[in-house]
Image 1 (cartoon, rainbow, N blue to C red):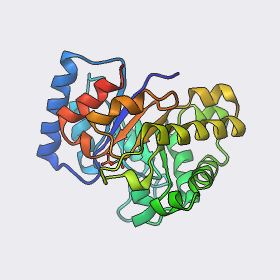
Image 2 (cartoon, rainbow, N blue to C red):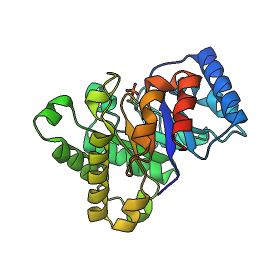
Image 3 (cartoon, rainbow, N blue to C red):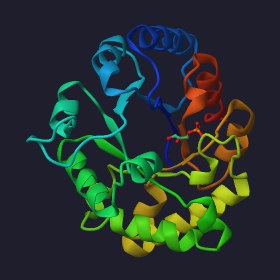
Image 4 (tube, rainbow, N blue to C red):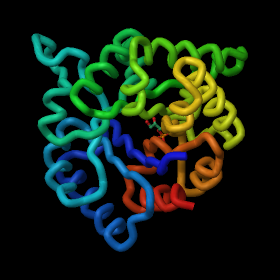
Length: 253
Ligand code: 13P
């Protein structure tokens, strides 16, 4: 079992001064006690440089929320892996359901982005998960298997080591409706089994699979206790230093 990872997805929150405030508060808390947990924050692009400066000499790692699959080119409004790398970015969230839904990102595009991130030594946090309709019609496993297989298409065993998977049921994101620990565990163990079929059981045991969707200090401990849950991708609750810190602490137990 891997060391747990707790990553905060800030989404489209926090301007420059709010970024300064949140990171300063978080550093202060983690300075007094930093548990044996990997911690990353993924602020918006506009805060990446400031976050990178504030996180120098800190164990908190820097992530981004998206990137384009091309290295450079005429893609107005986009940001590349090469650019993120130059600011010290270590993780990038790819395939988030909000990108899939609002920006029509396909599995194929996400797969290209994953490959590009790895090429630039940035660890993808590859998100997948079913909608409420898909769950209610009994399609959860079929949907996540399809997303997993297409997202990992053409990725070698060695490169898989650099990928973190995040199971985020769409119906649990921002809704306050968390998957129960049993519901999450069921999908995580299914994903691990599929990874072991696609690669082998040794690597499947080592790939970190995070859970995301309304993780809060109150439910984090029970989720993180599940055998196949290796940490969390946190939305709303990472926007306040106190609740994010409580979740980080819960990952240590
Ligand atoms: P919430 O924690 O706000 O439900 O968001 C989860 C998420 O989408 C993290 O990527």
